[in-house]
Image 1 (cartoon, rainbow, N blue to C red):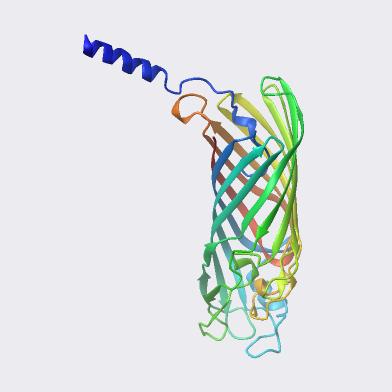
Image 2: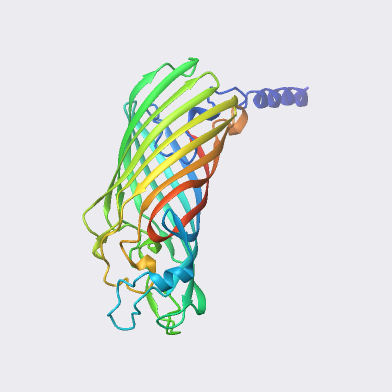
Length: 360
């Protein structure tokens, strides 16, 4: 009898375990590549982990592709006249991969404001080809540079400025504005060993795009509008990065302005699919680091930035029952359809963003 009572008690506990359907939906949040799209209610906390991979390959000037042989025979070396500096570029990047792990936290001390913070660990890898001497198209060899480290930390706040309807409404809309500050905790003095055109292997400061941080305090405004109508969702977001001042090395990266438009289809409560278009403009580097010098395009501040449009497809999943209820996983993959680069500059190839989110 005692054993029978214990079994009944255990069954009651198990049946009372989290097995109640939650009112969350897979498309409550924007595609995982969109950040700062939502706020929380008073007392809520959300933790997120994202992994992002970005690949670049080949080179462009404006919208036109250009070969390494063309670059080393036609593009002047900005530093010609300095010791050991040839008249044209002699080192050309051929491929670059960036991997970033981002950990974020959000907390709502009140319904009208949600605080947020995010840090990252960044790994970059760039392949190059070096040409012999001061002219011609004879390759000397190849080399790679691979800096890594903790990036800049972002802290800020999101404010819900409009909400029409609630989760039970067939049609609803909301708008959120945000502002954050990027704290310059990432390194701007990374170094690497290279292969020079004179067949030497000096250790030098890596060019601008191979540094880990910006070195400046940056302002990051955003505005997001989202809506739902039955199983369909839609949204638009502006996000910017405005550089302030000059870093200790004597330069600042260009401002970034980015706009996204997306639609989603909530096939089931626990799964949705999304399609997104993202347009971005990035300014040139302003100023120059006197320690960044060499016959390579990435050392020239003028060969930075440009315009780019990407198309991305994604999937969002959310657990609605059981002990994993409320856990979210998102994936988004994309590639550029238009690039107009201040080149010669390596072009974007494709990107991947995978993330996990959980609110408490």
